[in-house]
Length: 157
Length: 286
Image (tube, rainbow over all chains, first blue to last red; front, side, top):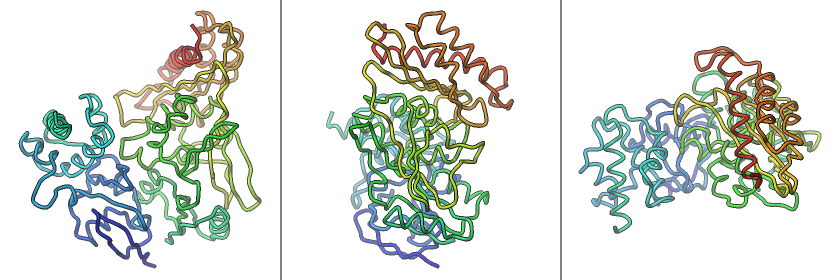
């Protein structure tokens, strides 16, 4: 029997019906058309499906859609302000911190969550903060640098 | 499968107790959803306990801390009083998975998943933590080390679930620590691990000790011989040597690609020794 859920996604009230065993990732992608979160592994290892629920970074493949009643969800689709990209998004583009792009939405969400808690992270803290996000293209260096430069801009430094 | 998110412990127990099919408790879901995805488990009922009042709270009480079973591990390191009292417990729990997994995973779930390599368990055992179990016959308390019955099995009966974890009040001049060996820097589970909790007297002599080892037997071990090796000493070289020998002697590890029996047995002694040094320093010993 389907579960009816009322939740908030990127500031907007959203209602959906989902199967009780349906991961939130599938709800986002297949029911709500929010295809920014990717399914890399489906087992919480790659971070490509990262979202922020009630302020906490998590993998949407490890959450049931049914759990979202009354929660507040942030996805990659809510990161830019209209046509204005988030500084992280801009620095990822400017610094060529992506190649195939599959990991990028998850990287950006994880980086956003990291900077919300720690606006001035060391390189090591960035690497630990993004350790749950796998990238097979970039070798990570450009991602770390993009996060550093975005953090600097966001601090107004 | 049915999904339920009861508002009370009583309702949760009733749902779990009366289910005729396979019922599972959903805390953080970082093990359960992976097993569902892999087809390892096919639940008829999933009971999400996170809507129950207090289930995601960390409470400081006169006798220590009460940590709700649905509390994500990420919340532990944000609680300054908990970090100050039980840094080793928090360190262990904070090593589980990635930041994403930290946002969901729970210590109670880590314990009930009953992996011998569970990173949050040795620290809890060393700290003398207890679990409050709710069930059809009311509540009961168990020491954390008595919960796992083997790899992937616990002593919890039908209808029972862990409601909270209780950490005792920290003794004066006490300290704890947790260390694990992994072949990389993060995103891994322990090949060997050790949790140590020590209490000292005014002269720095160890009066109480609890030493737990992970990933060297079917369940996390509380090693009494390790405690005996330490009590009465000032963690001098002889005591550390006795501790390492007792830790290695307690190991009954598996031999796999992540670590041989010989390696795990040796490293258990090394980690017990190093964790004891950290715990001793944290207790104010010099």
